[in-house]
Image (cartoon, rainbow, N blue to C red; front, side, top):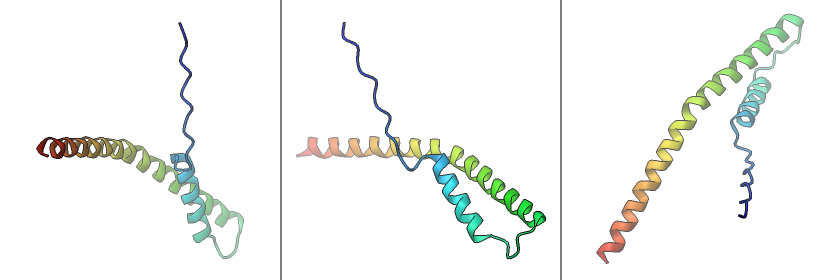
Length: 88
């Protein structure tokens, strides 16, 4: 009996971790304090951590929703294509 090869994982730059990291780096660059003291550095890092956690939570909520909407869209598209091919 032949064993099937495992599927290779598709590597994408749109992974949630990389999207969050890019957004946090963008936020951190935009909100960099004018003078970097120990207190402002701590507040700046806490702000970046907060943005990261909020983005992760948002992506955890949105990802299944987008997957569901994609499946609904592809199903309806297939139904429309089958409907037009039967009419002709």
